[in-house]
Length: 416
Image (tube, rainbow, N blue to C red):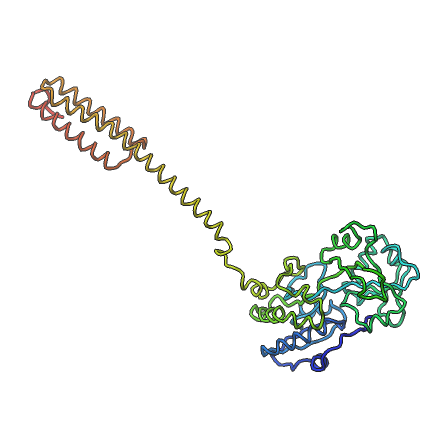
């Protein structure tokens, strides 16, 4: 199973064997030896050649080696299975395809569950540090299985495994033919409620995993009915410092040619499409990829035109209310001055009708009283220092001056 290959066109196979023509601008890409990663890498290399950019494809058996090489800047890109935790300094350039977990056993009787599957078994779970081996060890811990109760094989050739526990692409006919005597293990029982299988429970605890249904007939010699298993994203990762424009070009190539790439592996379109839930990625998207995916997205104003229109209407209404309140307050303050202005007019009328000194003195005192009341209101800001107040001050001064002249003529006052 582990040595199965997808047949490639001659040019692509030669490209993988010899690598791209490496020059100073070549990107160094690491992939595993398991299909469909090599086929995807070859397709990407061919596509990027149209942009005058070559890719040097290197194979690695251990994904952790590729990760460390990227961190040491010895590699630029790698196709790996999505990790179960964030990796500092590394970003996702694109989700590529779901890697399907194939769990096969050679027991005469089907295991009653995960614990029965693991205990006493010699298991090949891929390379050390790989996603399958990490998951198997974690499941053993979750189901209280001690490490001494099962055996992890370094490879499936020196000893025949009792159990294969492998993430990868869909099995080829050649691989299926080599698995005579093995049966697929399903993470579901017939009486499970929808969403209530062991696979759903595992995905709930390990959210980089997803339940994956292998329909009846996909591998008719390995299972009689549908098989529920798990899948994990395979992603293209890059250094955090990869140029944003270059990341944009790679994303444009991958997403733009996803249908052509899917000719090498049909499940590509499940992840490599612009509608995929990229927000759920364990490693954040590179800004260049995000810029490509958002290229046709409406701008901020277009996306929020209804909300902005509502806010603008509220603002205009608020300003109108404030202006109306200000005008109302100003009118009330003016009306107060007008009251005192009318009192001055009444005093002036009374002044015109009197000629005696005592009556003139009374008018004089009344004007001063009105002035004091107005100035108190002005200090308390109950009236405004506007044209109405100026008119009031002018009229009160004129009346006082007339009263002074009248009183002087009458001999009642010698000075003001």
